[in-house]
Image (cartoon, rainbow, N blue to C red; front, side, top):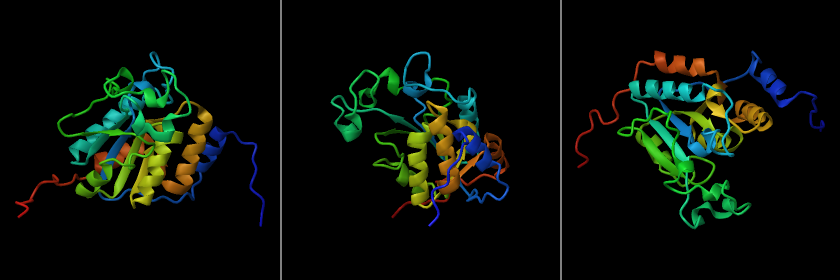
Length: 237
């Protein structure tokens, strides 16, 4: 059995090599997508206020807003998640036991500044779903799986952060639930380039398609649109 491959490439260089491969196979887009924007809350986006925040592409929020606008115009669901815990943090479980500082995960409390979705986001609070999640994957113990079934989607587009944490976990779960999974590269972010680029590689090679923002925007813009989900539905009984 051959030994593990070794390399002197940096994660950024390895990512450039992976995404430039002309023979790279894709899962591709399906017929209808859900846009899931992961934890774009001030704890992770407000770099001037919180030590836990980070920024990779300075246009991330603008790009996410554009995808949300297009998804709505095509009658595709838009979902926003945020992390926040109850007062005693019991719902953080073991995940909340490594540290206990004001910056610790389990100390993001419901209604706090750290839990607030970034004010730059264009959220339609009448039609978009806003979901409090407590673990890494958006699929874990949340209503998102039911939303995806209701909307009859076959493709999940993931944005947000962090690339190496909740985005990766959600990509693995998305594939495991049978969805084509798309990650727009400029729409995800991480604290450091090593986990960011390493996990883009892993997602691309195993769990989904990492595509340029422009390619995802073009797919949504060119999509003929889906019928409203409630159209043609009569009384259930």
